[in-house]
Length: 233
Image (cartoon, rainbow, N blue to C red):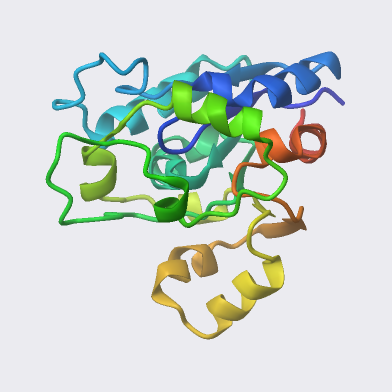
């Protein structure tokens, strides 16, 4: 059985380059891989004032439409918002979803954020796990990071098609164990309400940083490749 194509969407401040090691490992294993740079993240010089959350959703939907077969859509971190919105529009074109240290969310992440963009914070202020990421990788992250369009934080998308809830979904848990996710869902935590409403969810634990594409790229590729093989055909 052929494997499904794979589309990789990075989280805040990142372009397609963030997936280079994972994409390389997947291609070496024979997978069809597309990594995206979302609008406004092309370079530090890009005008982000007019970029909207809908632009991010459109870019993801366009990539899904261009795939040679229904793809696996893997979204990292803050890309969980436009990624989930895309499932509302192209659920019938998706083989599966993978949330990489992320989860489906409708937004807004920060409704009071008023600036055109948000630069990468200091490591202390970022408050995310950096386990397994080298100083060299952190320096590259800092050097290549692009401010995130403000609309990605303050906007939300209206969803209309509940068939999105049936898209087969894998949650790759890296900085936070799956057992804690499940308990939070059982406890009725509102920020996980959407995840708790999905009908077909699998869990994979890969203890490492919030950026497993750098700290454990080979293992991340193996998880994505397995989902693509299981979803092929």
